[in-house]
Length: 510
Ligand code: BES
Ligand code: MN
Ligand code: ZN
Image (cartoon, rainbow, N blue to C red; front, side):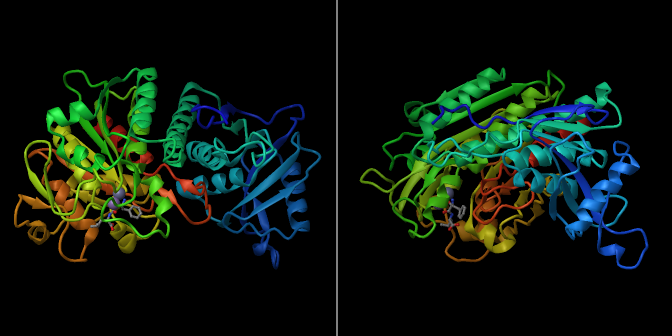
């Protein structure tokens, strides 16, 4: 078992032509469509989407080999063939579906991901898919090649190390092309960082360890790092983090990671991510079935840490300050009880009617603290409610917050392929959070609109004038179904790409 080195992404190189000499242990990934030359029946045959890098002979040979196997070029259909004339061990055709002129970036990303995911025992991937969209190809390949084998012994460890090298063919190798490639590579590496955190089991990733790893990565990236321990949290009035953390033998933490790239005039953005390293529900304990999925209850924290690290790596000209509350929600003799009252950071009192609604308790403290820095924008993300999954399913994050910023975040999330969807925070839900003894209750008395009630709770802690968005990724952060596109089982890294694209948009447009 290795230490916490994490997943090592393959090295990406941009080239303007196929290699001259044969490359060992290599695959050439080429896009194909179901479309033909007009001959009868040919529309159901895989046709190579030929860019400038394959000559007519190569295309004819690949198509002949595909035809012999009956390949049809349907969406994400994979067909591996040997083409001796090409300088690679084999060719992997990946279907893009029906013939069209412009494919969305997400179509390319998923095709690249499905292709990379299918490869084992291959060291070097070369591809012409990049002629259609260079960045989407790199993101898809790197994300599809992701694997997490840190906790496998030799008995079940994968026999090969996975794809080590990716060569994307491009029209040129000018600085702008190389920077686009570096951008995509950095984004995909950040998603891998978030996935590694989510995939690390709660036995090994508990608040103190999580904070330690976030600190080490932050310092290596040149961030300012502060960690508040349980004593400092109690001293400074972080009643939500202390209350949730006190049922566990493993004390809570609050990590602050600052990338100060904005100078005096740049915009300031706060990020907040839920870092429950395991959620049993506490005294309001969860049923046993699928409780192990609660290893993903720090998915928001993982994405926030990965995003601020990426902001530093890409030198964004804005301030990005991340607040990451970390706690383990356990039942014990020292745990908080249903009916307890705690005081959130900033003074609002809360009656804890359900200890399983713990995310909002630690987030409220962190949001209130983040607002003291007077950010222009605040993005908070969390695996907050089962109701997210009931409303939107496993792949669609719910985005709530101030109307304009919420819509901007949801629009950008759609554009990057993470598919966040705007949801309202109806005024009347506030009444459901009334308590008979405190300022607020942490749950409503009804089963209606659970995702929106949680968002309504968080809204109480956002300072006036701060544009904010809350992204509920309860299911999207963790894939408990089969792998698809560039998404493996387990941690997905969602919504890292959404948040980073929002930061880039703010850096460019204010
Ligand atoms: N971490 C859970 C939400 C969750 C559920 C994430 C399923 C991923 C998959 C959260 O802390 C929780 O338990 N929420 C409760 C809130 C309820 C008590 C108001 C829920 O959704 O049931
Ligand atoms: Mn819970
Ligand atoms: Zn939780």
